[in-house]
Amino acid sequence: MSSRKRKESSRTVVGLLECKGWVMSSTSLKEKRRIIQSGLARIRNKFNLSVAEVGDQNDRQWTALAVSGVASHKKIIENELRQALRLLEEIDGLEIIQVDITFM
Image 1 (cartoon, rainbow, N blue to C red):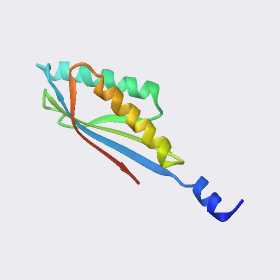
Image 2 (cartoon, helix red, strand yellow; image 1 turned 180 degrees about the vertical axis):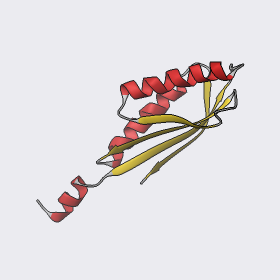
Image 3 (cartoon, one colour; image 1 turned 90 degrees about the horizontal axis):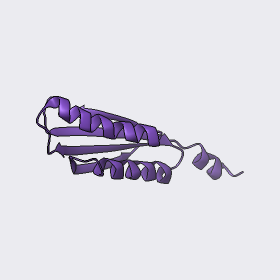
C-alpha cells in the first residue's frame, strides 16, 4: 500500500450542518419543543449523527439547530448531513430559513 493510500484511509472528516428555522404554527415554547424534538429524534434514529437545538431556545418561533458527524471520507458525511437536512425540511410546521454546511 502506498503512503498516499494510507493517509487517505486514516483521514478523519468532521461535518457540521447548522440551520436557522422558523416554527410557524407555534404559539408556545412547549409546542415548539415538541415539533423540534420529534424531528431531532427522527435524525438520531435514522443516522449516526449528533443533533441539538443550539440557539433561540427561549423564542417560541425561531430555532437554531446543529447536526454533526464524523466519517473517514467527506462524501460519506456530506451525504448523511444532506439527508438529515431533507428530514428537517419535511418536519410539519418547520421552515428552514438558512443552512450552512462546513467540514473540518
